[in-house]
Image 1 (cartoon, helix red, strand yellow):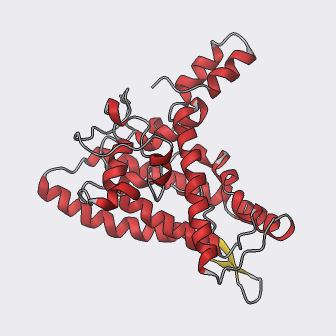
Image 2 (cartoon, helix red, strand yellow):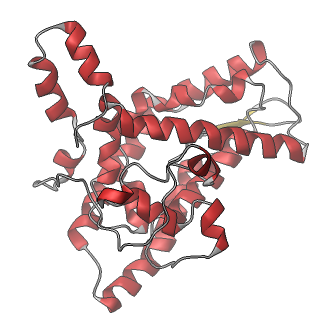
Image 3 (tube, one colour):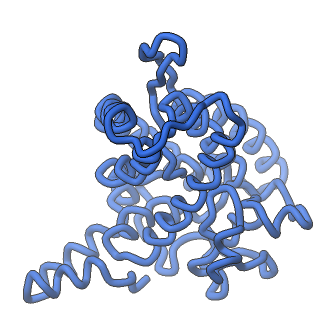
Length: 287
């Protein structure tokens, strides 16, 4: 899911008043439509993993509830305040170049945040909730970590600090949600040259796979530009095997939602010192 701020509110460009625009409603609508299609196709093909899908839906409902309650208006209000009082530039939302710049900068920021979620233990403890799914479907897209609320809103602060108008946030947020939804499927095969430069379902299947050659690859949100530039791109060759390298034995919602925090907390308690515990929290994960 995107590091670009996804806001339930926007500014009316004419009056400056707040407008209610809920990007989560876009996610819900797209999920419902795509899931129905995919379930029908999967059942006919004998590939539907009912348990995995049910768990993903349960985790996703909790995620959306927490996100709306805890990270909704407060995050939006801070973004608007920063834009109005601290923004370095003053981008015009009417210019196509502004939208292009927002998209490119957002994709670059997402790449590094997403990469950190895989390479920093405390972030991986949260993010592995999304990777615990043992199948890749449109429902997998909503299996998101509840603990994201404690750090993800801060990763979008680049937008108001650089002076991008708040009216752009829900539009780009909704666009990112729809793109992310479409990446989580096996119904779309490889797409030739398009796979080389964009985050297609094929490239995202690689990202979700636990095959050794696929680990920590294809972090890009919309494009493969940064993966190719920084050496983390891997094309889909071998059939992906999904899930964590050490699968969860308990796939109930309440266990999946805890992510890797039970193991991390045990490791921190046995660290012996606060300094060592801090190093463990920031070190690369062991699984």
